[in-house]
Length: 234
Image (cartoon, rainbow, N blue to C red):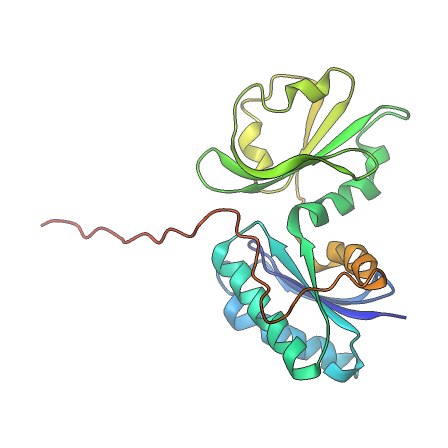
Protein backbone atom coordinates (compact mmCIF):
# COMPACT_ATOMS: atom_id res chain seq x y z
CA UNK A 1 0.00 0.00 0.00
CA UNK A 2 2.16 2.86 -1.28
CA UNK A 3 1.02 6.44 -0.77
CA UNK A 4 2.98 8.69 -3.12
CA UNK A 5 2.97 12.43 -3.62
CA UNK A 6 3.38 13.20 -7.34
CA UNK A 7 4.73 16.58 -8.45
CA UNK A 8 4.51 17.82 -12.05
CA UNK A 9 6.00 21.18 -13.07
CA UNK A 10 7.70 20.42 -16.39
CA UNK A 11 5.44 22.73 -18.43
CA UNK A 12 2.64 25.26 -17.96
CA UNK A 13 0.50 23.10 -15.67
CA UNK A 14 1.55 23.03 -12.04
CA UNK A 15 0.11 19.83 -10.63
CA UNK A 16 0.36 17.94 -7.35
CA UNK A 17 -1.47 14.69 -6.73
CA UNK A 18 -1.77 11.99 -4.10
CA UNK A 19 -1.88 8.41 -5.35
CA UNK A 20 -2.38 5.16 -3.47
CA UNK A 21 -1.19 2.00 -5.18
CA UNK A 22 -0.83 3.87 -8.46
CA UNK A 23 -4.35 5.31 -8.46
CA UNK A 24 -5.01 9.01 -7.97
CA UNK A 25 -7.01 9.87 -4.87
CA UNK A 26 -6.73 13.68 -4.97
CA UNK A 27 -5.13 16.36 -7.10
CA UNK A 28 -4.70 20.11 -7.21
CA UNK A 29 -3.43 21.89 -10.29
CA UNK A 30 -3.37 25.13 -12.21
CA UNK A 31 -2.47 26.19 -15.73
CA UNK A 32 -1.54 29.72 -14.70
CA UNK A 33 1.63 30.69 -16.51
CA UNK A 34 4.84 31.12 -14.50
CA UNK A 35 3.14 30.57 -11.17
CA UNK A 36 4.83 27.32 -10.13
CA UNK A 37 7.04 28.96 -7.52
CA UNK A 38 4.06 30.48 -5.69
CA UNK A 39 1.47 27.73 -6.14
CA UNK A 40 3.23 24.38 -5.78
CA UNK A 41 3.86 24.43 -2.02
CA UNK A 42 0.35 25.70 -1.16
CA UNK A 43 -1.10 23.00 -3.43
CA UNK A 44 0.78 20.30 -1.52
CA UNK A 45 -0.20 21.76 1.83
CA UNK A 46 -3.83 21.84 0.75
CA UNK A 47 -3.71 18.24 -0.46
CA UNK A 48 -2.24 16.98 2.78
CA UNK A 49 -4.64 19.02 4.92
CA UNK A 50 -7.89 18.03 3.27
CA UNK A 51 -6.87 14.36 3.26
CA UNK A 52 -5.83 14.63 6.93
CA UNK A 53 -2.33 13.43 6.18
CA UNK A 54 1.13 14.47 7.28
CA UNK A 55 4.36 14.08 5.37
CA UNK A 56 5.24 11.12 7.58
CA UNK A 57 2.24 9.25 6.12
CA UNK A 58 3.81 9.28 2.66
CA UNK A 59 5.86 6.38 1.36
CA UNK A 60 7.68 8.38 -1.34
CA UNK A 61 7.70 11.56 -3.40
CA UNK A 62 7.72 11.38 -7.21
CA UNK A 63 8.71 14.30 -9.40
CA UNK A 64 8.56 14.81 -13.15
CA UNK A 65 12.21 14.91 -14.14
CA UNK A 66 11.97 16.33 -17.66
CA UNK A 67 12.68 17.18 -20.33
CA UNK A 68 10.75 20.42 -20.10
CA UNK A 69 10.99 23.96 -18.83
CA UNK A 70 14.29 24.65 -17.07
CA UNK A 71 12.66 26.84 -14.42
CA UNK A 72 9.64 24.59 -13.95
CA UNK A 73 11.73 21.47 -13.51
CA UNK A 74 14.06 23.20 -11.08
CA UNK A 75 11.13 24.31 -8.91
CA UNK A 76 9.51 20.88 -8.84
CA UNK A 77 12.71 19.01 -8.07
CA UNK A 78 13.72 21.49 -5.34
CA UNK A 79 10.37 21.09 -3.56
CA UNK A 80 10.43 17.30 -3.93
CA UNK A 81 13.94 17.04 -2.55
CA UNK A 82 13.06 19.34 0.35
CA UNK A 83 10.13 17.11 1.35
CA UNK A 84 12.25 13.96 1.02
CA UNK A 85 14.91 15.44 3.30
CA UNK A 86 12.38 16.68 5.85
CA UNK A 87 10.41 13.44 6.08
CA UNK A 88 13.21 10.98 5.23
CA UNK A 89 11.39 9.69 2.15
CA UNK A 90 12.69 8.09 -1.05
CA UNK A 91 12.71 10.20 -4.20
CA UNK A 92 11.28 8.85 -7.46
CA UNK A 93 11.96 10.50 -10.84
CA UNK A 94 9.39 10.06 -13.62
CA UNK A 95 10.26 10.73 -17.24
CA UNK A 96 7.96 13.52 -18.44
CA UNK A 97 7.65 12.15 -21.97
CA UNK A 98 6.79 8.67 -20.72
CA UNK A 99 4.09 10.09 -18.46
CA UNK A 100 2.57 11.88 -21.46
CA UNK A 101 2.01 8.48 -23.08
CA UNK A 102 -0.09 7.16 -20.17
CA UNK A 103 -3.47 8.83 -21.01
CA UNK A 104 -3.08 8.16 -24.75
CA UNK A 105 -2.22 4.48 -24.30
CA UNK A 106 -5.14 4.13 -21.89
CA UNK A 107 -7.53 5.37 -24.60
CA UNK A 108 -5.74 3.68 -27.50
CA UNK A 109 -8.94 2.29 -29.02
CA UNK A 110 -10.25 5.82 -29.56
CA UNK A 111 -7.40 6.57 -31.95
CA UNK A 112 -6.59 3.37 -33.82
CA UNK A 113 -8.56 0.56 -35.41
CA UNK A 114 -8.58 -2.83 -33.72
CA UNK A 115 -5.41 -4.73 -34.58
CA UNK A 116 -3.60 -1.72 -36.05
CA UNK A 117 0.00 -1.35 -34.94
CA UNK A 118 0.67 1.94 -33.19
CA UNK A 119 3.62 4.05 -32.04
CA UNK A 120 3.35 6.78 -29.42
CA UNK A 121 5.30 9.99 -30.04
CA UNK A 122 5.17 12.42 -27.10
CA UNK A 123 6.51 15.88 -27.92
CA UNK A 124 7.34 18.83 -25.68
CA UNK A 125 7.80 22.30 -27.13
CA UNK A 126 11.45 23.36 -27.10
CA UNK A 127 10.89 26.69 -28.91
CA UNK A 128 10.90 27.54 -32.61
CA UNK A 129 10.54 24.31 -34.64
CA UNK A 130 12.36 22.19 -32.08
CA UNK A 131 10.81 19.64 -29.75
CA UNK A 132 11.90 17.23 -27.07
CA UNK A 133 10.70 13.84 -28.20
CA UNK A 134 11.07 10.08 -28.29
CA UNK A 135 9.04 7.11 -29.51
CA UNK A 136 7.36 4.19 -27.75
CA UNK A 137 5.91 1.05 -29.29
CA UNK A 138 2.53 -0.37 -28.29
CA UNK A 139 4.19 -2.35 -25.48
CA UNK A 140 5.40 1.02 -24.16
CA UNK A 141 9.02 0.15 -24.87
CA UNK A 142 11.16 3.11 -25.91
CA UNK A 143 12.42 2.67 -29.49
CA UNK A 144 14.04 6.09 -30.08
CA UNK A 145 16.47 7.97 -27.86
CA UNK A 146 15.15 11.10 -26.19
CA UNK A 147 16.47 14.08 -28.11
CA UNK A 148 15.93 17.71 -29.01
CA UNK A 149 14.74 17.43 -32.60
CA UNK A 150 14.13 20.05 -35.29
CA UNK A 151 10.90 19.05 -37.03
CA UNK A 152 11.04 18.22 -40.72
CA UNK A 153 8.50 16.82 -43.18
CA UNK A 154 9.96 13.29 -43.03
CA UNK A 155 9.93 13.20 -39.23
CA UNK A 156 8.86 9.68 -38.14
CA UNK A 157 7.73 8.76 -41.65
CA UNK A 158 9.69 5.51 -41.59
CA UNK A 159 7.39 4.26 -38.84
CA UNK A 160 4.22 4.89 -40.83
CA UNK A 161 4.91 2.20 -43.44
CA UNK A 162 3.25 -0.50 -41.35
CA UNK A 163 1.85 1.38 -38.37
CA UNK A 164 0.06 4.48 -37.17
CA UNK A 165 1.97 7.17 -35.25
CA UNK A 166 0.14 9.14 -32.57
CA UNK A 167 1.72 12.52 -31.80
CA UNK A 168 0.73 14.54 -28.75
CA UNK A 169 1.98 17.04 -26.22
CA UNK A 170 2.79 20.74 -26.52
CA UNK A 171 5.19 20.19 -29.42
CA UNK A 172 2.80 18.19 -31.59
CA UNK A 173 0.89 21.23 -32.88
CA UNK A 174 4.07 22.40 -34.60
CA UNK A 175 4.01 19.30 -36.79
CA UNK A 176 0.45 19.80 -38.05
CA UNK A 177 1.59 21.94 -41.00
CA UNK A 178 4.37 19.49 -41.89
CA UNK A 179 2.39 16.26 -41.60
CA UNK A 180 3.12 14.23 -44.72
CA UNK A 181 1.18 11.04 -44.01
CA UNK A 182 -2.40 10.15 -43.17
CA UNK A 183 -0.92 7.52 -40.86
CA UNK A 184 0.12 10.27 -38.44
CA UNK A 185 -2.51 11.57 -36.05
CA UNK A 186 -2.07 14.59 -33.80
CA UNK A 187 -3.95 14.35 -30.51
CA UNK A 188 -4.73 17.62 -28.78
CA UNK A 189 -5.10 18.40 -25.09
CA UNK A 190 -2.42 16.09 -23.72
CA UNK A 191 -0.26 17.90 -21.16
CA UNK A 192 1.93 16.74 -18.27
CA UNK A 193 -0.16 16.11 -15.13
CA UNK A 194 0.48 14.48 -11.78
CA UNK A 195 -2.35 12.03 -12.43
CA UNK A 196 -0.44 10.45 -15.31
CA UNK A 197 2.70 10.07 -13.22
CA UNK A 198 0.94 7.86 -10.67
CA UNK A 199 1.23 4.41 -12.31
CA UNK A 200 4.86 5.02 -13.30
CA UNK A 201 5.75 6.21 -9.82
CA UNK A 202 4.07 3.15 -8.29
CA UNK A 203 6.04 0.85 -10.58
CA UNK A 204 9.29 2.57 -9.59
CA UNK A 205 8.36 2.27 -5.91
CA UNK A 206 7.66 -1.46 -6.18
CA UNK A 207 11.03 -2.05 -7.86
CA UNK A 208 12.79 0.33 -5.44
CA UNK A 209 13.99 2.48 -8.32
CA UNK A 210 14.88 5.48 -6.18
CA UNK A 211 17.12 8.46 -6.84
CA UNK A 212 19.99 9.73 -4.76
CA UNK A 213 18.25 12.72 -3.23
CA UNK A 214 21.45 14.65 -2.63
CA UNK A 215 22.77 14.40 -6.18
CA UNK A 216 19.66 14.12 -8.33
CA UNK A 217 19.24 16.80 -11.02
CA UNK A 218 16.43 17.31 -13.55
CA UNK A 219 16.83 15.99 -17.08
CA UNK A 220 17.14 19.34 -18.83
CA UNK A 221 18.39 17.80 -22.11
CA UNK A 222 19.67 21.20 -23.24
CA UNK A 223 21.72 23.76 -21.36
CA UNK A 224 19.82 26.78 -20.09
CA UNK A 225 20.70 29.90 -22.07
CA UNK A 226 19.40 33.07 -20.41
CA UNK A 227 18.31 35.92 -22.64
CA UNK A 228 18.77 39.60 -21.96
CA UNK A 229 16.01 41.90 -23.19
CA UNK A 230 17.22 44.58 -25.57
CA UNK A 231 16.49 48.17 -24.67
CA UNK A 232 15.00 50.28 -27.39
CA UNK A 233 17.29 52.98 -28.71
CA UNK A 234 15.68 56.42 -28.65
